[in-house]
Length: 357
Image (cartoon, rainbow, N blue to C red):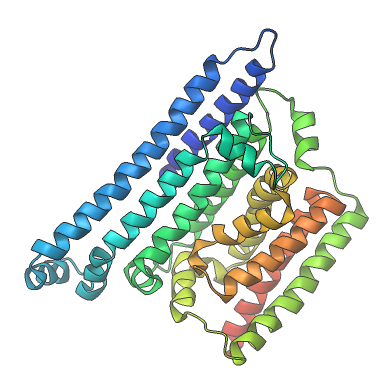
C-alpha cells in the first residue's frame, strides 16, 4: 500500500516539475519551448493511456455480455471467496464505466488545446499559455475520473467488493494516509515552483503558509468547532427531511478508515494529515487560480468515497468556508479549521460508538 502511494504520486509530481521548468524556459530571453514540448508529450501520453483503458473496459464489458457463461463464472468467483453477484455486477458495469473514462480522456485532450484554455481563462483567472496551469486542469479531470470509477461501477458494488480491514490494520492505514498527504503537500510545493522557479520562502508565501499567530490558531480552531457544530446537525436534519442517503457510503467509509477511528493516533491523523496535504493543494496552490467556488467543488469531489451525495454537499460547504478563510487570512488558518473539523467529527463518532448513540 505504501509503495503504491509513492508510485502513484511520483509521475504526477515529476510532470508538475517539468511544467514549471517549461514555464521558466518560456520566460527566458530568447524563449525556449523544448521542455514545454516534452511536457505536452507526457501529458498527451497520459490521456492516450486513459483513453486506451476506457476503450479496453468497454470492449471487455461487451465481450462479457455476449460470451460469458454466468453460471461457470459465478462458481469460479465463489471458489475464490468473492460474492458472485457483486463481481458480475462490476463486469456488467464495464461498458458504462469505460464509456465515462473515454469521455473524460477526450475532455483532458481537449483541455490541451490553447483556444479551449483561452475560453476557460474568461471564467477563472488562469494563464492559458502556462504549462503548469495546463497540467493543473488535467489533474482536475483526474479527480473527476477517480470519482467516476466509483459512481460508474456502483457504490453498492464497490462497497461490497472492498475488503474489510483487519483489526490490526490501523497503523498501516495511518502510515498510508501520512504518506499520501505528505505527497500532496510536496505536489503543491512543486506545483507552485519549488525546486524550479521559486525558493522555499517564496514557495510558502505563494501557498499562504505562515507561522500562525495565537489569534489565527484560535480563529481556525473556533471555526472548525463551529463548522462541526453546524454541519453535523444539518446533515441529520436533511436525512430526517427525506434527503436520500446511500447506505453503502457508511459501509465504504468504515472499510477505508474505520480502524483509525478507534485510536487517538488515528483521529489525529485524520485531522492533521488531511489538513496538511489537502489544504496546501486546494487552498494553497489551486484557489488563487481556480477561485473559491471551483476549488471547493473539486475538493468535495476528491472525497470519492461519498460518491455524489449529501456528504458531498457537506464537504462542499466546508470547502467554501476553508476557501473564505484562505482568502481573508491564510492557508495555515484554513489548516487549523480543517484539522479541528475532522478531529471533532471523529471524536463525536468515537463517543457515539462507545456509548451506543
